Amino acid sequence: MTKPLAAIGLMSGTSMDGIDAALIRTDGEDVVEHVAAMSLAYAPRERDLLARALADALSLTDRNARPGCLGEAEAMVTARHAEAVEALLEQAGLKRKTIDVIGFHGQTVLHRPEARLTVQIGDGAALARATGISVVADLRAADVAAGGEGAPLAPAYHRALAAALKERPVVFVNIGGVANVTWIGTDGGMLAFDTGPGNALMDDWALRHTGAPCDREGKLAGAGLLDADAFKALATNPYFEQAVPKSLDRNAFDVSCLEGLSPADGMATLLHFTATSIARAAGWFPAPPTMWVICGGGRRNPVLIREIRGLLEPLGQAVRTAEEVGIDGDIVEAEAWAYMAVRSLKGLPITWPSTTRTPKPMTGGVLFRV
Image 1 (tube, one colour):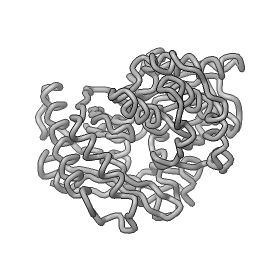
Image 2: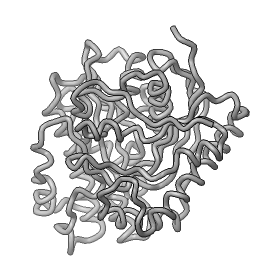
Image 3: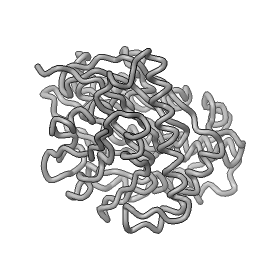
């Protein structure tokens, strides 16, 4: 067994609500020690800047170009991530010299793997200079350049977490802006893909109709009724018939079918769409799972979790939130980036044909040394 490294993972997901930071010690394989974690929220003006960056990114054909407000957004993302590192080290009572590496996701502004294009803004070199710690960034790029989907990337870490669970097959679900699953079989084999929307469509609807960044506790959805016609329009998107592995851009779904619905009915329809999209993923699994472990911000929506349970538990498939199996569901993805940074340093695979459709197991990431 090699000596574990101290690694910080930084994740800013497609929900664009803030930064999750986590510190673990790991050998990049079996040993994982959870040390500290925290979150740093984006201010409303910063979320607005990121929303404008998404719009400006639609015209990108060069992943290194920064037209419109993308340069400003990248500088903001980098600076806030440096703040998150400092806050995490202060919370943990550690000096920066004790940290071996940072795994830096950045902020995805465009994801078009079919065009071999994925763009995450965030300056790895600048982050290394600001923190005094070596940074591994751009972990998706090599996979996409080789013809892979570039997402999801957390399956390697999901398999490490699954080592502590007796249930097999087991599925890890991350409900961020986009939802994704990792199926782990009895022999450790994996299948992973994006299932469809996570929180992004619901969050956008809440912001547009209530001014709130999300539907807290699912209260708006709980007060509404499903609109069958709008749901059918959403659920017949050709993405769901596309073979796995597969991945999605945050803005892949057209929600114009919801126009004219009340805020509550629109939210109820979007929540049902998210829940059924996750449950439909089971149709692709090699064998039915005995348990689904729900991670990410979506697990905090009790109406969404109740709906997912109602779809899966009658089939004899248990649904558990991460905390119910001893995992902090808020920081799994941040820890995954720390874990993958260590694997990248060691040249170990972070993607496989069964997780991203890459032609062979691949490592990834660009190292920025201090």
